[in-house]
Amino acid sequence: MKLIDVVVLTDARFINPTEVNDNNRTVLLEDDLVLKALEKQGLKTIKLSWDDPNFDWSTTKYALFRSTWDYFYRFDEFSIWLDTASQQTQFLNFESIIRWNIDKHYLQDLIKKGIHCPPTEFIEIGEQTTLAELYAKHNFNETVLKPAVSGTARHTYRLNPDNLATYESIFKELISKETMLLQPFQYNIVEKGEVSLVLIDGKYTHAVLKTAKSGDFRVQDDFGGTVHSYNPTQAEIAFAERAIAACEPQPIYARVDIFTDNENQIALAELELVEPELWFRNNPTAAYDLAKAIKKLL
Figure 1 (cartoon, one colour):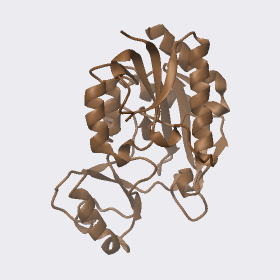
Figure 2 (cartoon, one colour; figure 1 turned 45 degrees about the horizontal axis):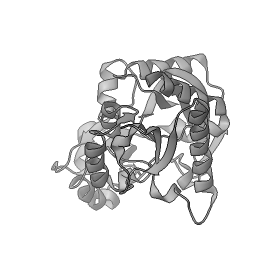
Figure 3 (spheres, helix red, strand yellow; figure 1 turned 90 degrees about the vertical axis):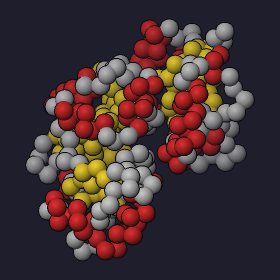
């Protein structure tokens, strides 16, 4: 029997934290906006950690991924939970989208559908190669190395011919355990920042501009990056909507991270469909749009 309409998923750090700091204060606010929006639609909802050992997932109609921000550190556990819980309830975004979007191989699918992405070289687990060999093969100059499954810039490194030797041992260890990828370094992300557009039910709602701190290239706030209000151009909105239209099935919520690439074209940095920060605090109406879209599914 389905007793709950929607469980809002988080991780254990954000369930009744004993200490409230800037980070979890923001998460609590964002999740509260979603909970209140769902409740205003007459939906019965609770907030739980995805790894809650005492909850019967068959008692909820939907499990809505919001702030499950530890999954990429506990990916094996998370994968087992996905397998189990997906047999008992429906995920939002939908299970197939989540599994597809977790791994950045999805970029290859989007490129085939005409979505402009930076050139990406995937180095699969156990592949016998070195950074020096890859640089020679592709005539790389400056690149970014990062995992295919990741978040918060985990194991993300800026490489160039002068520092390859420093990172060879790290690279060798990483590809023994997980797929990595190399992309040309994008200078405009440092100069201009990265734009995040939020789309609910396929429609643009709001956007922010993320900028790296001086001397860094990572825009995440974990590394001193800052977030600013942003009014995207019609071309940027159209790009984001095309990116979402290329997904199958259509996600109910999405964050499309874009930038101006080295050839001055709009390009996709990442498509965030699992547990992205959506900055509902910047536009609370978007939380209500999400709740209305979920209610239509019931």
